[in-house]
Image (cartoon, rainbow, N blue to C red; front, side, top):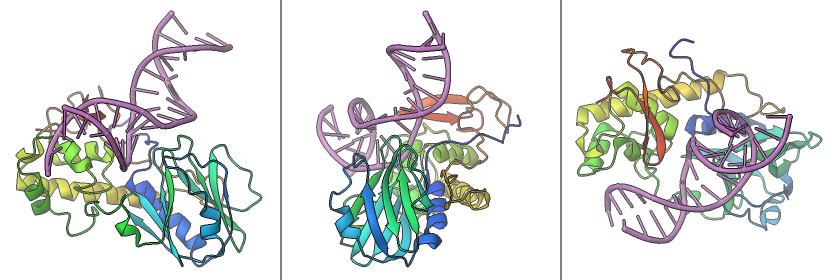
Length: 281
DNA sequence: CTTTACGCCTGACGGC
DNA sequence: TGCCGTCAGGCGTAAA
């Protein structure tokens, strides 16, 4: 197998969440909720027992995304959905057979149902009647990777004096959102930065490269999601498992596609990290 | 303040 | 073949 054609990871990172948003929103926006059923409320936090009463009859406005949270704007509040480690959303018809772990279903008029499937139940379904940006879970999030605020100077200034690994730094949602374990390894590889290097010892120029690569790689993955065959209307809407070119993630022992040295794996901040010790310093 | 460890959960996988 | 231990991982939270 060539070095740069990898299998996919099974975790919804930001590109998968964005792809889910783009797949689901045109099917549901503007429709009114006709029924809500919660088959298993035991997610990361309990699904609000009042969810059917809260959502019933309301019209869905826009579907937005902040970090990896999906925000369904209704007339009287916002449904906050997080896919956790194994969550996926599908839009189906009411007759569509349930799959295992289809925990929450929101039926809309017009015959479409939004189903949340989440085997590991690390996901979230919450309701807020306040602006979701002020919700405790979202209030302290850093900039989006595509926002201008996510810049080299921002990373440089914020990281001064920090001794923790740069990989942990860019995975910290208070620094920047949406950089999960896979894309952290990948973007650091592209930027030539060793993942364990203290964040405070990365130069402005290298943070410029890193910010660029984070945007590039997330953008590529979103593009890939848009072009990958995925159908949110039928049963094959498993999100997030589209192929993406992973150059180091999951490839310990394989040859670096740049210098052919064997790639390494090391646990940094309780997470598997993949890198090339020759290319990344 | 920064940094680190933990636990939530199930499916996949390896060893015996 | 089948059982069982281990691992994976986002991310909030507690603790250092």
